Length: 78
Image 1 (cartoon, one colour):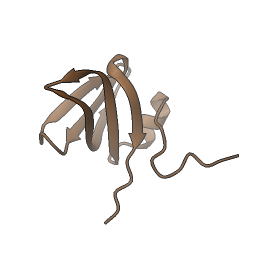
Image 2 (cartoon, helix red, strand yellow):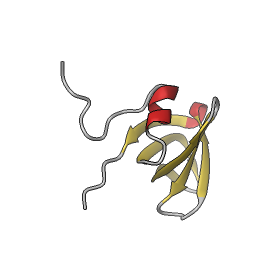
Image 3 (cartoon, helix red, strand yellow):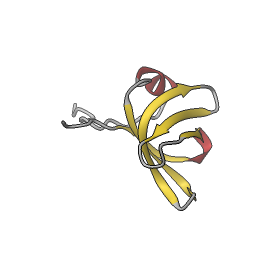
Image 4 (tube, rainbow, N blue to C red):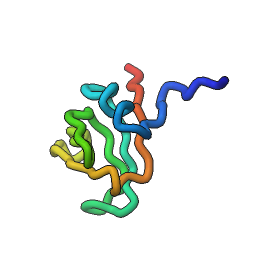
């Protein structure tokens, strides 16, 4: 069996729950404010989606699971 690697995909609610407080990358199906990719700290998770402190806009972004095309844990190399 192969490892999912450092930037492991997040697919299930429990994956998101396990990565609260960690850095994630979310790609959305449709652009929001001209962007489809959001990277930041996963702040909260609920039945309909997540909230991320976005590193680019420095804003709190609420993203529904139905809006997501892809989600990954994003390892940060220092």
